[in-house]
Length: 439
Image (cartoon, rainbow, N blue to C red; front, side, top):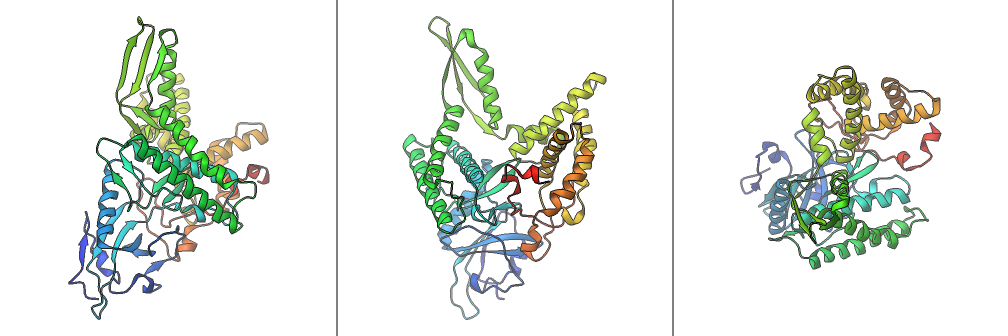
């Protein structure tokens, strides 16, 4: 194809971009180029394609909108907000006959993620629907903290990844978003929240119309719960708190609550008043990812926040146990031991043909959960290695694999465990409260 008129905007030029058939309308791209993956509802045509061993999402739109969204996604990445990674803007497209074609925005496919519609192959259950809304509320808080007004908050504009029994939400469509200097007013935040409530209600009602929603779920009530969840989280993170001087333990409780939500406090302002009887606590700067960063600094593992919290619990227990017999051992040395002697053997025990089922941190979390179940059932302390073997044979082996959807393996480079196939889990066994009884 002729590429002399193409205008490619990219932070890091990838020559393989030129291999894609930009002279064809996106809906006419050949089967050996496109990839069949679940996707959400979009006002624009979106398709997935192979690009140098990776998978990318391509959206046809106007040059102005593609350029604006590309820049916004890059800005959100610099602000450490969960969102898809922008790859390039391809403008100046034309057919071999010279007919103009829409500009394309290219983003990297977020591995192990799914749009809400594709999370389950049968019906979206109550617990899952609620967890998706809770994850979206958390994402909206993070966006508002950096001054981002979304303007089109919805489940469809979000991707979800499993996160140790919960979900992590990622922004996937930023074309309507703006970042406002000085932060968002309460009115703008409420506007976004109302858009979220209305859109989610519509999306869940649509699922119900297609018999993909548990009949016990009230779409309007679930959609409305994002308002309560968002406001509670926003209040916990940003509000002042007056603490009587006789109850200063509440200061630590507040800090622990923020850490449990995944936030650090960079600066804390305290001022006494009323004759020294109260202390005012006002978090100045909040920064999400407390557990993720701590785990990464200790072990190098890159995990979602809940996964990191779960693994840190196991790591801290290991450190406490080892320190009883080796009091001189340092935290860094013990953390490295845990990584090499506990974490690595578990994730490396996954056979190559199953390595694409789940991310290694999620596998480790589920093995810990399975060990708890086995120990309860058998009334004994089941060794982790034994639990891992049982989990792989009875649970992991029966999960669906993304490779079946892709049609080809996707090569992924990871520093810990080499994985050659991507994975998307479409099963809903972990949302069945009785699934453990069926093992």
